[in-house]
Length: 442
Ligand code: FCB
Image (tube, rainbow, N blue to C red; front, top):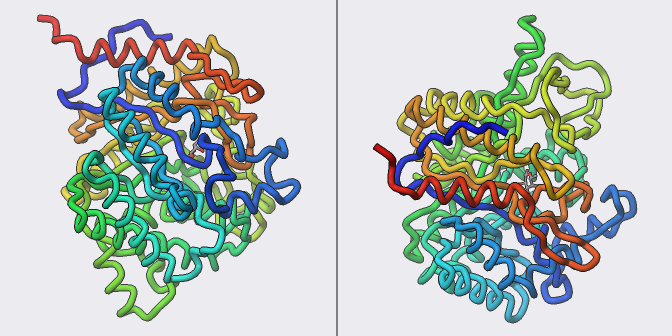
């Protein structure tokens, strides 16, 4: 663990932790089904055969969890609102109670409106889902807007498109490859319409949480560079160019559903200016020319025929998930986004960063987080306007297709007793936040 004093972040910088509804809430019987319920019910979809029916039972234990947040001393808590729960009678009452509890504890609520748990009857291949999302956003904002100032529309539409609809390893389990592109466009349209709906309901602090990571070419060979550029478009530009510049990367707009005129009209909505831009960062990806059947990050088997292959990053520590630990990738990423988008990039918040490790004495997690917070500070020193950092995650939780096998929490959850036990990293983060609030010395 690094022992040098952590450099100081600008005044007003937000320190927080993140979770998502499907991964922690449980109480599945008290909401409508989502695409994830159907997916996890299919044998073989989730590695340990588990479901999120109970998960951390946060629905019933939210008071204990808010007390953990208060004990941590964070400024803000990023959670997600479950659309299927909101559609169920009394579903919004839960978020009402949660927001009240957070406000009473002095923790700013930062809800994400969509973190992958689409109501089972809906489909992102349908354009109409975008308008429905905006209507749902308006209902939530109407109810919580008197106490919630900061909103996130979507979480990682890139992963939801790629893993859920192109590769079929997440819900809804479709393997459409490039025919999944309408899913990207409809989520982006949903984002833009929701920004308008939130603003109409009085919101003044709206962002999105997009996943990003530097893409490193496997070599200087043109074939590897081209493959890396292509991957960079898929991961780093397809969802940020439209949001920040009102255009798709070259060659992508033509592949979207609708006429060019319709796409242009949609892009105007998609590019509704944001108050801030959320970045989820875990690791860079090393990419080369295709090699046959490929393995992607996190061990996902990629189908043959893709124009790239994902290569291992050697010589780095790895998390339990097998992800390489590359803190300086965060500095590279943020300065790269600033250089790419210039004035169009609003202030940035790191809406997710974290790692999976076993154990309560989780020194590797402390080292990971320490390294990444310092890397973030280097980006700030290089002129990136970063305003917040959220650790993924408060609690060990249901890690999608991995089930309960990957533990990302600052707090350990025993999934038999549901007991919460703060890990060493919880104490470390609490001290970091506390020290950042002390008056500067000298
Ligand atoms: C992100 C997801 C989040 C969690 C972390 C580990 O891609 O947004 O729900 O699964 O990865």
